[in-house]
Image (cartoon, rainbow, N blue to C red; front, side, top):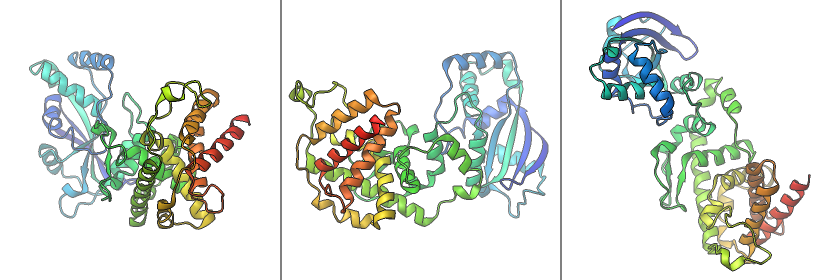
Length: 389
């Protein structure tokens, strides 16, 4: 292992150190840190690229530098990123494996897999460069991961949102609510109380900006240009907690009131006949999706700004929710069939439907207030108008 240079990074107040080592040494470090970065994705490299990279490695190709990070918790006392130049300390941090992978996770997976297949090959004596960011705070880790995202597969917008709001995941929730990350690969067993973190984040983000359409990648990357935008205050975290708990209460109340179960044979050849592949076949499938969460988020923003309603005030009205027409849910599904067939932007129109539905359900100035059937009817009318534009 050899340390080559120290360059301060004043953007994230960390030190960039260029280190060169044999692949065998990097593998020794990597096998114990591969799962240490909580923000990283699972394996996404394709089998074709993996096979090609393995062949290149065996021919002793030079791969791009792998970027590692040393958090502020593992630094010597009095560390100053602008002046630090202790080569022995850098080697010690690496040998003690007090680093995480910021960029190069997919290459690392391939290196470890190839080592398992060919542990004695001469390729492991080839050298690899590592850029080590020393003294990087969590916000800096996020920033560097997003700006150094040069892997074979671009991070999805939803994964970027997961990273931006990751610290919300440690929030304690009432009513047995559980959140799961995509990389957990856990199947939802209780859809009335268990949710995908990324989908709840989309809903909460819609509440923050008042728009039912999901934030796009460009908006996220623009937001992180200022590191302060990544900081989350206690008030914001409390708002996220309140949003999720209110959504959970609404979903369970609608499920209780409607007692809906889709039976296609019962509606065939009726006015509600539609495709055999509906938007959802249960209340949790219909109202528990991302489209509903973002629609609710945008609606809650409107109700707060225009009607002065708080989450607590809306929660206090839930016991009075009713449904005056048992066929209303079939009409909703029929209109979602219409959206699928006629809309140019299906997802956006589905979210718009839910925004109007929730506005209608909770706005006391409307005749649809607290009536699920009438709120669905109003949303259907607005969708008709929107699709005709």
